[in-house]
Amino acid sequence: MTIAKLRGYARAGGIELAMAADMRFAASGRTWLSQPESLMGIFPAGGGTQYLNRLVGRARALEIVLGAEPFGTELAERYGWINRAVPDEHHDAFVDSLARRIAGLPEGVAAAKEALDAAEASGPVPGLAEEAAAHAKVYPSPDDIVDRLRVVMNRGGQTRDGELQLERLLESVPWAHRS
Image (cartoon, rainbow, N blue to C red):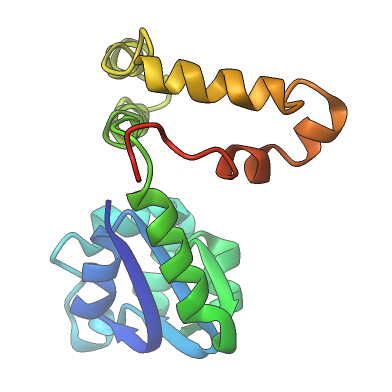
């Protein structure tokens, strides 16, 4: 899993590298993205057209590539070029916390990423067979996952309040195989 933490200007090869990451988070008001290559008579390489098209769609990718103007974080977020614009004073803590959360998850992370990648690669119809194959890598669930979910249910995971706080409730139960 790769996460790009963006602050400052990310142009051409820099933003192409960031687009290759699984997720991108930018400091609000402190980050600008651009694909200025058309101003040089060329177009983005290094995966720039491929990643951009998948992230923002064809029409917006054309606007970005041919318009060659810098995008602030709010517009980049609205277009889907970045996952989220985060206030600069919280940017590092937010991204670091997310990275730690993901690092603490079990093996299912790779399988989930594989299933999501298959859906994207399959075109207009989701890759349900690939998703099922990825799910088969984590089901039937290992005992520590079953035990953890049992604890969550015992703590009210199936109640309205439990549902409203599900993420916090799940975070409160440690993984059996982790310290």
